[in-house]
Length: 164
Image (cartoon, rainbow, N blue to C red; front, side, top):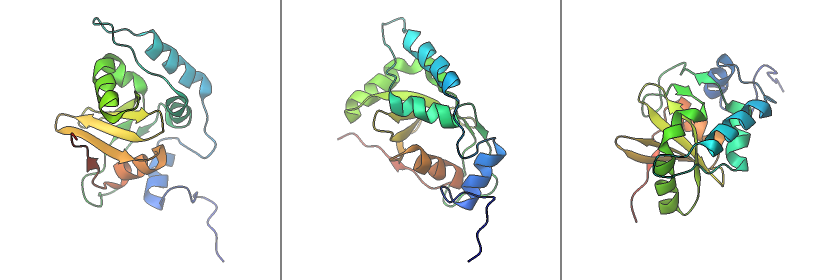
């Protein structure tokens, strides 16, 4: 059996290639930077008194993927793949928006980064599920960061959240 040691089996080859081109590798873990972001988000209070929720799922996602600028390397499967900047401070001034959506979903949300071409905000919830919020609505990207990145980088159509 032939094994290619240059790629991981965690992500599909095109997703793995885009992540590696952005500087990610298995075992990447920058907890110091993740803690800086956590402190900045915790310290921010909107003029109306809204605060960010910060929880382990967000800190872990930032430690592994934070700071990456990911550019798609090919066409998407169903839609254009997203260019991403995984930097949670893109959502610094959106504490109220994230709080409102979190209440609607019966969870807490924390910023994860943005889709750089559209300015859509990426957010992660306390269970590790990932969403994107843009001018067209709110979208579910996947049950964890791996599947969300795959959805975004591979250009798979996300699921639109609808009000119940």
